[in-house]
Image (cartoon, rainbow, N blue to C red; front, side, top):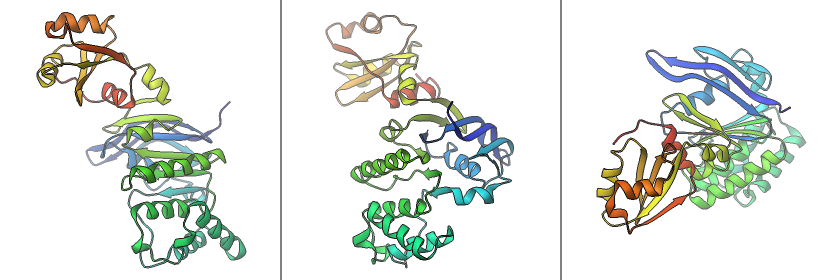
Length: 308
């Protein structure tokens, strides 16, 4: 039986009349990467702050690594790492000085602190930058330093709040390789993102909207159980075609991708290609193909309202 690192039941957080987290349930297994996918303002960051004990829930129960939050938050802090969305280290210190300072906060000292700092510099390709002031680093270098600092004390659980929002695709890919290395050695990771390709890398994924969990499963299961079929259409006058198709109740959504129109059709339509040709005589000689779903399709199918 899997061991649970994070458990939340009925978790709700309100600020006055605003509900930031609306009665969500979570179960994050140890040694996995669990993702929160959703747009800005959907409640991802508030959820992380509540799970770490920084915020007190308005209602519900939260247990993290066997500790009740926020009552036992002080005991939890030395066992977790937290990388915030905004870079939070010191620009007027060097890379090495930042690592040593954060290590000291986590109780490291002497030979152990020196060894950990050296190891983090090597692991995150920062050795050649160790004497450079942080203010002169690039976005990708700052990201690697943040991760090195957040893991210098070898935490059991790592919280990452949109950690790759300010870096280029190559640095994002390298960053995720480091996360899988950490996971391989037993670290549990909860990461928020609004990038679909990152979400697909997670072992399990929750999709959030307006403080609610709209879906929670493995990316593969989410894509397999969407309740829609996807048809790509290559035809003329795609803008007019889209306007026509989204008016049908059988169509969940449609979006143009270059010279193709990607149409999500509810599975109540047994033969979506035949149905499309029946509804649109102009498609009789067009190219139509049923294609595999993506996480973007999943996100569209479980969030928002159907809008013609």
